[in-house]
Amino acid sequence: MGSEPAGPGWTDEMLLTRYLDVSVPAAEREAAFKTLVGRYRRRLFAVCFQVLGDRQDAEDAVQETFVRLARNGGGFRREAKLSTWLYRVARNVSIDQVRHDARRPSTPVAEIRAVEEPAVEDHTAASATADALRTALAGLDERSRQLLLLVAVEGLSYADAAAATDLPVGTVKSRVSRARLRLGELLAESSQPERP
Image (tube, rainbow, N blue to C red; front, side, top):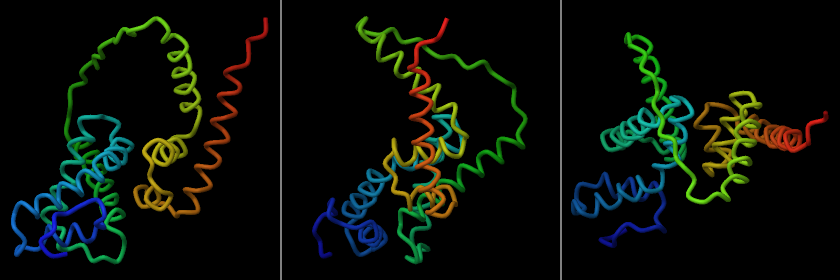
């Protein structure tokens, strides 16, 4: 690897090795770590959000995942891909957060959401489509919806989605396939005009 800067052609394992190598200048080690963060922040957020259901909690879990990578990356045994290890850590951090919150008494606070006004009136059709999609997604069981979003929206491979959810790859493939079919059916049903 020499003293060349970490770049997009580098594998995750090369970047981790670079980050952990104390003989490499600090700026290059930091660049390697930032490259890993850039590659996985969005995907890890999706994994954490699926478990936690709250954006801020998911962001905190992602941050903790990267902290664990920084502290414990030397313990990565390379028996699996680094991405698989990161997804498992993110999922475990999220589950730990859920357990911690369940033990801590809390006072319910009403959720306040800002209502955004569409900039252009032509957003009515897009809004109707988004509503139909949300309704159709709600018609899927929770696990199928989670897997479909991880694969179709967040772009995780079947193997990475399997690692993130502790399911076999074959199960993920079949659940995503069935979820896509069912989602299509639900969208088709919602586009049918109502009969008087």
